Length: 448
Image (spheres, rainbow, N blue to C red):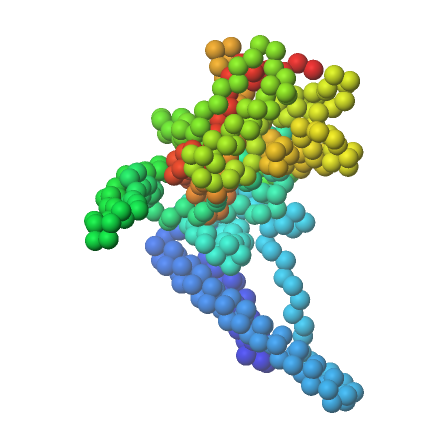
């Protein structure tokens, strides 16, 4: 028997010992372990993890040895029969769309039923996530990283998502602790000037700065699920995770655009102090809007000395542009393939998650349904944002919002509460004038 076989045999024996302890507890109809049983299980879990690491290393070494042996045989061209050995192939992740194990059921059974097999699968999943993400650290049951396939499944649901956050923000990792971030902003710069006469004092201005404080905000959601749905249901993972996670991202995106900065909200783009451009018209047209777009661009270049990168507008505003025609009913915004002449905008016409496929004045148009449509005194106006992607800063907690917590708050009703939450911070205030905000009666609800 090889050393690897002995380690595997011992690993099986450890599992059998743990199962025996837990089965004895279940036979006595107890929900808690004694101090002696707890100590024994903890010791066995620690030994199990140590053995798992040895098995992983020995398996990898065996695979390397087998590959080296194959290479030597090929070079020597010796047809020697292979005796023994094995080949290690790719090991599937614990939770996938094809696996029999249910992430939500395991999370429930591990916490409320002390199911060792469920605990073991969750622990293995957490190790897989730590290797995959490397910057995610979560406690075993206080915070579980939701499997990526469930996160991906969230995308098709009918929510606005986070186009602005993904297309036009400089994304960074939130520090592991603290509820504020501080950035120094220079408010008075140094100076230079021509020296009129040799030996004259040269220009000197003392620099001054102010602290830009950015608050870390919490976004969270919860769902009450019946115990029957957890224990007997099928597809609960996809239903709950998809809806809660997509809702979290949609709320984050809406906050980045519209948040007031007060009452726990993020201070969003429209409240960060960008260049204000007013488009006033009772009969708006693309021809009247066009100069306002140019003004928004030049104000960024004039005041922040950078070039903007995107237009961000509500889907109905892009539709307003696409529906516009000239005096002979020719569209003003057309696909580039049509070979436009004097078009106000062009594009491939192939929209894909926020990227409309169109551009104006050389800037791509990002559509985001999280932009408000009830602004202005008439409460029916949207806004157009001209932004510089590098000056829109977003910090997110690694793994957010892939954190799950079960709380048995409705035990008398067989109800399990699931909470998804995460932390984020955002600012467009480092250089506020690197963005322009176009608003006014000319952006009232369009008719088609």
